[in-house]
Every structure is written in structure tokens, then in C-alpha cells.
Length: 592
Image (tube, rainbow, N blue to C red; front, side, top):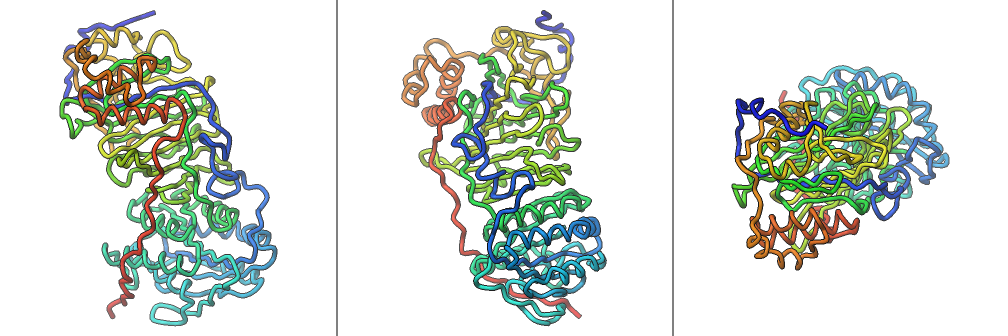
């Protein structure tokens, strides 16, 4: 056993920053509940109401499906992907509807063309029209997709920049619009104006919802993942009960996205938010690391650090945090961002980013899986990551907006469902000024990081592979503590955060520990919030939190302890009700 390192190696390091890290990463080795179970499963078959593995199509009843396709120049890959699968997609529509279906095709180039209006059993016309689509035109990147939605929702006839006449949806049928685009909405002037075009797009969603039409929005990130486009597309789906899906940048996965929409009959039941398995850890807002072996230590400086990363062959999961001084006490730090690579074992995983600032959850990076979103990620929602082609669920995230006695927090439960990490979970709660995060790995999955190692060992490895230490040494030797933190910094490990994360961590000048009197002064506060000395590391964390943050921090510590340690729901679900929305911004015309 090689414990400790040469202090001179670190004497010349340049350390920057101030304050104290605010996360507890912990891990019990338990397996999450199955799909639909009370603690951590995906709701329904495969999550979000879709078919989990691309199997038998459920019956949806009479169905009207309108395809609104952006066919401008950048969409060639997506269009070719749909062309190759259109016979099978129409087979699926026929099966889902029991033969009682109508299809409509609205194509966007430099104008809107109702190529195929609704008609009974018109698969041949639809297929032929799709095979005849050629990508071209478009001018500026924003496109008139919001006006194409208006055409479809309101069954409009010819008008400036539109040919053909849309046919109304049947009142007795399931009403579905599948929108496929890579661009912001532009009305008719080929420009996106915030406060105008986003308002108009929101009005389209409200109009569809009022008419009982589900909009499933398929985003093809040909120019990268634009948060503005994602927000508008997700809003279409959220307000109407549809699904948001994100393909690969080259358009692969577009047909899979349509399959998923039809499999789910245009949308899915609201997820239940999930509950993590018992045995997980948690944090109260200060950096109390609890190792996978259940031991605790503090590192109380800001920095960007790897909490855990896989050491198992074929697995490439990593979990990182970005910490900054806490607004309520500048002598402490808190985690304000979390980055997790997802799903496991893929050549190009996505990066799931949690942030104290809105949007609290985002899926970033050019990953190679199909991303599916059901529900409202600011309320009750679900995100799935599916294998291209098979649509097998590889990982998913359940979200819930909750009130913890008046304090709003956003809760996230990640479940890995394939590869060596299958059955493992990551649980996080985003509070207004900090994030708590927990990892619960299965026994067969080997991980290491600032949280030590799982399966647990008596020594903790340095992140750069040079030496090892013990928790006791991290609790008593500040030189070893600083060296250990630096070895797991993103400066050494590389950053998962697409926007970057400064890897240099602050140097802690001394081991910080509460005196006996300080502990005694706050002990009853922790007991009042359900944490006793029997909680071990969590008791130590609560004492420190109550000392630096008062009763409010002890309350939060108690809530997350009950939620993560006991695997029981805590807090009251507080979804955001759909707003009435801004008034219709009207239709603008292109200047002559």
C-alpha cells in the first residue's frame, strides 16, 4: 500500500479560489426497482409511454397523423433517413390505428406546401410523396415551421407562401402532428425575433392543445444543440401532451423518432418522478464527501472535480461537479453544476448537465443515441436515451419539481439500464443555490473518484494514478487532501462540461473540523430534523451544515437524508401548471 505523496511535488503548484465544496457523493450497492415500480422504474413500458424495445405496436384507435417536414437544404440526412423507412412507418400507423387512419404531409422549403391532405387509407399517396421530397432552399436558418403548424392545426387553404389546402382533423380520431426540423421558427420573414417568433410558436402549441392535437417535435441538431430551439420544440410537446425527440446531427434516428411517437400513440402518461433505492447518500449544501465505503471527509475549496468515473472495461461513465462560493456564506462553496456522461458504453455519449440556473436540466453534446422527452422537465418529466434502430432503452432520467416545506427543489433520478453499469443510479436535487448528488453503483461496476472506490477498498486511489491514501489521512493531513483533490480535478482528468470548467482547485490551508462545543451547540438542531449520531457520516455533515448555515441548512440536510438514505419520497410534488400563454403575435409577411 502506497499511502501519501511527496509534498514537494505539490509545493510549486499554483492554487486559486476560495471556499468549500458542497456535495456528498455516496454509494450503496443496491439495484433499482423495475419499470413502473415505486422506487426508480421507468413509468410504463420503456418509459414515457413508448414501446421499450421497438416490439409489438399497441392499438391507438382511429388516428389522423400529419407530418410537417422541414425540407430545406440542411435537412437532407433526416429526409433520407425517413425515406428509407417510410413503408415500415406506414405499416406501423396502419397497425396502431387498426386500419382506421388518415395521413397528411406538409413540406417546408421557401414556402409551405400541403403535398398530401388527409384522406382515408392514403398510405400510397403519402409514401410516394415522401420519396419525392428533395432537400433544398431555406435561405436563412430560421424557417416558417410555426406557420406550417398553423396551416395544419387550422386547416388553412392557399395564402401567401402556401400552396395546397389542409384538411381538418377528425373529431373522433387521435390527432397527432409530427414536426421535424433543425431550425428556429421564423414566421414568413425568414428571421427569428425573440419576443415575436417564440410567442407565435407558443400560440401554435396552445392552439393545438385546445383542439386536442398532440405535437411531437423531432429536433435534428445539424448545426449543434441550440438551447433556444430545444426550448421551443420541448414547449410544443409539453403543452400538447406530445413527445420531444432529438436525433443525431446527420439525421440518423429521425425514423426511429417517428416510430417512437407512433408506438406511444402520440404521447405518454406523465412520469411519477421516481424514488431512488435505499442506501444512497446525499448532502446538505457543503462539501461533505462520503465514500462508497461509508466514510466521510471534507474538502472545502472551490474547483471542478471528478466525483466518480468508471474503471470497468466497456464502461465510460463519468460524473463531475463545478463548485463555487455559496451566496449565503462566502467562506463555503457549493456545487452549482453537475455533468454526467450518458448512456454507458456508447462511442459518443451525451452529457447530462444539471445547473442551479434555469434550465436546470439540459442534454448536451453530439451523442449517438435517440433522446426522448415526455412531460415538463420543470415539473414532472422523463428523458430516455434509446439505441438507434432497436430503440432499446439504455438509460433514463425522471424529474420532479418539489416543495420542501416551501423551498422549491428539482429532483432527478438517473437509471442506467444497459452494460456493466445496468441497475446503477445517480440521484440529485437542485435547490435554489446548490446541488446535492449521489451515485448508487451496482456491485459489478467498478468506479473511482473523489468519492473513493466501489466496490469499496481500504485505500483511495489518486486520480492521476500516482499513489493512494486513506480517508483517515484525508481527514488529518491537509497536504495529502490538497494533492488528492488536485489529482481528481478536471485540469488533470479533462472536463465533461461542454462549456468548459476551470480545473484548478483552491488550496486548503488547514483541516477544518468543528470543536466539541461547536458540535454540541447544533446537535439538537440536527436531531430535530431526523438525523442522529446513528447516521454516521451524515451526522457529521449535518453538524457542519447547521454550524455554517443554521437551522435552514439542517432542515435541508434532514430532507435529503430521508430521501436518499431511506429511499422514501420526501417533499410535495409541485408541477408548474400550463399558463394561458402570451397573445398570438399574428402572422408577419415577407417584405417584397
